Structures are given as structure tokens and as C-alpha cells.
Image 1 (cartoon, rainbow, N blue to C red):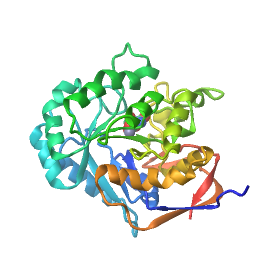
Image 2 (image 1 turned 90 degrees about the vertical axis):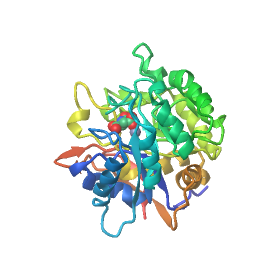
Image 3 (image 1 turned 30 degrees about the vertical axis):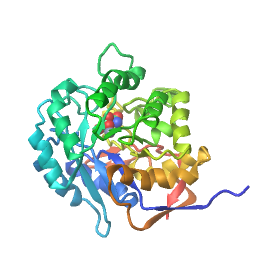
Image 4 (image 1 turned 180 degrees about the vertical axis):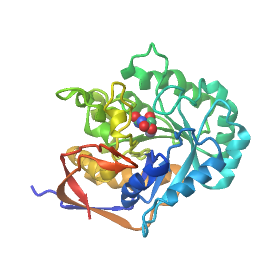
Length: 346
Ligand code: NCD
Ligand code: ZN
């Protein structure tokens, strides 16, 4: 049997991305701009992007880092807090540059300390979002310290997400970076207003990758990698070609020293090879025929945006990922550093 040598897709988008700020931008924006026409840019800066005014300024700084000749549109988001007002939501909608509002349960992940302490504090903002048609993007992990770290997504769905969906039946929601069979089933069985993003790491690796011959800080992200049966369940839904699951890398650069530390940060950098990594995962599952919808069609449909013009081609031509890329004055260790990836951008 001969295998496919080239893959041509309608130009894709990344529906979950961390670009950071300052001198990190010129280091990471080009990787994304080479592969994606648009990206949902997460607002977990320090301090977070909580207003439309801040989002506009951040957008300009991102655009200044787009390489000459590349066409890349950042889709901005606001960081939901206990104090987000309905007025701020309406300003965001009217701006035309804000595409979602991110719910970080306080304490759930990197730069989430300003997040929502209890969803009831955000009800005025959620009501305004439902009316404005602005999607809620959810980091779905329970933060109660009594909950086992591997159960946090499942517990969040039961205790927080399901009740919230009852209270806001008209709110569009994306459950971000899903990691469990439970989340995959919940979204699959959900209605038209519920979608999910999937990262490359959660379909390429299971939790063994965290402890392969020793502790592997560069495989640590949140939600943390789960058991093989969860990886398999997520890949199964993607291999069905389900329309409400779409590409969101969660590429999250941290300086090497912040990862290789006694208390290492959560976040995996994948922007350098994002589409190539998804192609490997889909190929391994015999599902390459569904890659284009996942990468290029399902996201725009869910967000109510047009599909991109033009196409992008991957060729089968293995290449070795560098050990590190520059990140401002520091370096970032990318996913699969020092190993080969089967697909290359044409
Ligand atoms: C992200 C980051 O570093 O900003 N980290 C991560 O492990 N995914 C935050 C997030 O999306 O949870
Ligand atoms: Zn993220």
C-alpha cells in the first residue's frame, strides 16, 4: 500500500493560542503566521486582557510582529473576572475585534489568579454574552484542592459546566483543550452551541509521556495528559469527523528555565510544527480525510466566520525539530525537540 505524499487543505486556523507579549511576540508569531490565517489569542497576560481597550492595544502589538508578506489576523479575547460588567461585554461585541471571552477558574492554570472565583460572580457578564452572541471559552478544570488532578476536567463538567449551560441555554461555549473521554462524550452529545478544541499533545501522547525515563517537564501542560483510553476516545471522535471539534493548539511558550525547574510551569510549545503534528496524529488514526474539516472548516462554522481563501500544502519529508528556539532573550524548548516529524510545510 502506498501512503499519501502530500496533503492540501483549505488554509487553517488555530482556535486556541498563547502568544505572550513584548519580545516574545517576534519569536512566536511567525511560527503561527506561517501555518494559520487566524488564531484565537488567549488573554492570560500579566496583567490579563480584561477590557476591549487592552485587547485593541495587544492586537496592534501582535500585528507589528507579523512577518512582512504574511497575512495573519489575531482574533482577540477578553479575560473574564468576577468584575467584568455587561457594558464591557457590549463594548467588546461592538469593537468587532473580540471573538470570545475566556473563563479561567481562579487558580486553575498559568496566569489564572485573576480568574473567576465562582461562576455566579460572572452571571451579569454571561447574560450579556448570551445576548451579544459572544462565545464563552472555557478552561474546564475544577480548582477544589480535594479533587484529584486527573479528575479535574470531569468534575468541572459535572459541577460547573452542566449547570451553567442550563442557566444560559443560548450561550455559545467552547470547552477548550479537552483531555478526557468524558469531555469528548459531553461535547459530542451536546447541542449546536457547544464545541471543543483539541491540542496536538492530547492526541499524540498519554500520561506516560510525563515520566518517560524520568520526569519530563516539557510534556507538562494543563489540563495534564491523561490515560491512553482518554487519548483514544478523543481521537475516535475526531476520526468520525465530528463537526463541533476543531483545532486549538494551546501552544504556550515558557522560557526553558521556567519549565526545567523545581516547580515547572504548565504549557507546551507547538506553534513551530502545529499542523504537521496534527497530520501525524490523524494519519496514525487512519483519519487523514478528516484533517481539513478539523483544521479549516469546523472552527469558522462554529464561530460564524467565513472559511479562509487559499490552501496550504504539507509534504511527507521528515525533518528534525531544533533543540530550542529563541524566545526574547531566552529560549523555548518545542514539542518533539531533537526528534523527527514526518510532515513538512511546502
Ligand atoms: C497555558 C499557558 O501557559 O498560558 N498553559 C497550559 O498548560 N495550557 C494556560 C492554559 O491554557 O491553561
Ligand atoms: Zn491555553
